[in-house]
Length: 168
Length: 125
Image 1: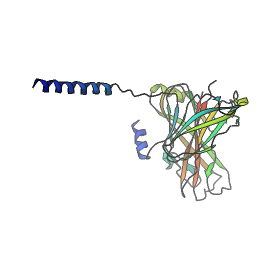
Image 2 (image 1 turned 60 degrees about the horizontal axis):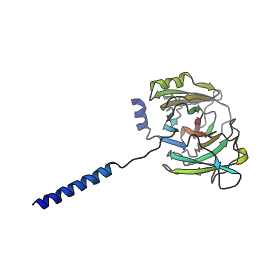
Image 3 (image 1 turned 180 degrees about the horizontal axis):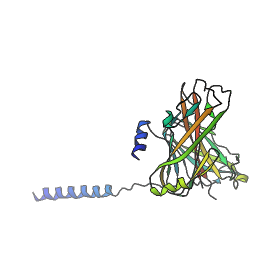
Image 4 (image 1 turned 90 degrees about the vertical axis):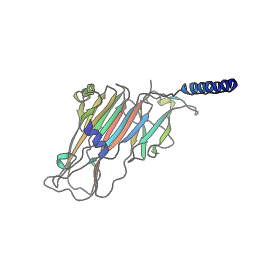
């Protein structure tokens, strides 16, 4: 009886030692500075009148939503450009007047509102200084007006919004 | 925030593009007079399967470089290591190494505003 108890105790002790050994297994990881550009919503042009294509929800469109995930503050500059031409369209015989904007709409930290107040705009480009780590969502609006009193011909239309993350 | 999360669910899913490291270093390659750096491209964009690699100086002028493919075919959720080679004489002018998504497909009747993503890493001085 005594011998059996000693054997059981020995088995229990060795199992505990194995558990203790497996509990000390390490998981290693590596954190490095990076910027990830994520398209949370692709834009869709609405056609409120025959001569206008617009991503504004009030015009029946969907505004593209782009997320920048920044792992380290002040390492990157975010650049968002609304389109100035179609990448796909039927033959257009008149000029297209483009307007648009890019704005910060949501952020993981309230301090990131500085991105919007210090943004720099020129032509169709908006630059954001990504000084704080976290996630920031940018909404882009795009509006194309065709000629004067003309209708867009029927067909497929697509345009590209350029989003860039440039290391500083 | 709740609206954005809802929008993400409604729009299907998010598509991301990742290009690391942020500050790569040029090191001598196995070819004499040629420097190289190793970049990693991760494609989490379902709508994109091609990325273009480019190299620029500090004024955004193109710098000659060589990779296995300048247009990289990469599947959704695939990670690729891309070695970029530049001439040793250009090593001081090389500043940015970039990858840019190439959007090629639209369906009939679509009216889309598609985001194209470009990420540029800066060579460590």
